[in-house]
Amino acid sequence: MAPPATATDRRASARSSARPQPGTPRHPPLQVFEPAPRRKAGSRAVRRSTMWVSGLLVVGSLLAVVVGDSMITQGQVRLAATQGEVAAAITTQKALQVSVAGIAAPPVVVSEAERAGLVAPTQVVDLPQVPLNVPLPVPQTTATPSSATPPAPTP
Image (cartoon, rainbow, N blue to C red):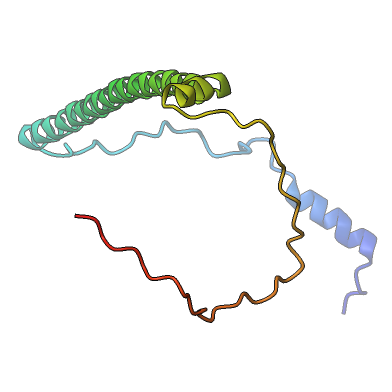
């Protein structure tokens, strides 16, 4: 029987078996890869219909964009017209407020009252201020007998 091989002997035998022989090539020779010829994907009719469908999709999408843009433009025109109407209404309102303020001015009211035959008071009496958190007494609601007879209606 042979003595057991040591680790050094095993490494040496592995190196000698891993080395290629000087006359043999290291790699197999290279070959050009040629794929198998392709079959045609479909007939011309299928390709033509695909082209028509894709063209219609492009034209349809462009038409949708144009329609959307025109709708936005029309909305902007309506908005501008409405804003003009609002500005005119605001101008009219302000003019009416100025005219009402002129009519309701104190000198104008006094002159109109004098024209109607009213006389300005000689003395102005201010009413006393009443606190709102104090409750008022309940008023008397009983009827008092009157000795006078009611006036007769005039024909």
